[in-house]
Picture (cartoon, rainbow, N blue to C red):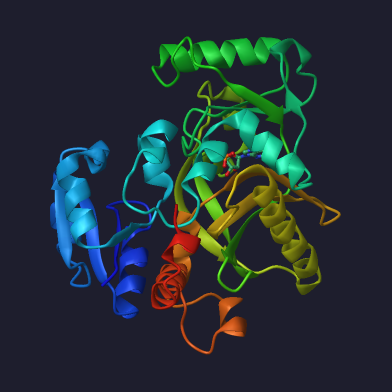
Length: 341
Ligand code: AMP
């Protein structure tokens, strides 16, 4: 029987609960320091205890996964803690497309794929000298917004970068990515593409709550001006959002375009869950600053099903359960190779 495995963090609970509900065996690669937490949940059949997640590459871990016919569900922690080379060398089948995860981690590749998908991206600024408007400065990889900062000109950029280096948040040789700041209502659009049905499903929308940029908005401007601290965009949690119905058609078009662009640039394409992240401006025009080519933690808010999935399924369907359903269908039809890499 096929089983479902993931790393103990991010959205592991949702993923494994969904797999259990679909009748699949569940395995968790768990850091010893988190064992107590994950033992609380009876839907986790087996814990593979490790000192660090990179041990998932070790023979010992790989053979347990192999014996269990496991499919690994990749999530943000896998990307944050392992290099693209490491992820690509995983022998266990990975749900979705492990090759596209490199396109998520590398800023230039990311921008290329977003442009191919005709997503409206903010203008990148290649040289700090050219900053003449408000910009956001980002780190490489899935840093979760930690160490990001805003700047309005070159001097501002240099001063904040220096401060973050002396605070130990950034390293002096770190390459940073600068892009125009897009103001508006944040919306993180969550999708699932099924290569079995060749169909795109829109799952839901969330908003991220980021510290301490949000905290800054809670203090009067007088104190904000006196603050010397460089605010960060560290994700703390997520909350749900539903969109004006008139925006949905465009949402599906963006998802379809992304799936098609991925097929052209990185075979076998964008299979499984993904997320297009951005903001709506005052004219309800979307600017997309980011994508995630795998399940996002924002789907955790819909463990009992999302508003949009209740339109597609007559049952409670989380993203974790949707993934497990796809695995079950593929397994039954001897098509696991179609949904894994
Ligand atoms: P990211 O790592 O690109 O998802 O960015 C982390 C957070 O920074 C996002 O959730 C947004 O709050 C913010 N952000 C990133 N890029 C932009 C942008 N171009 N304009 C406005 N906010 C942004």
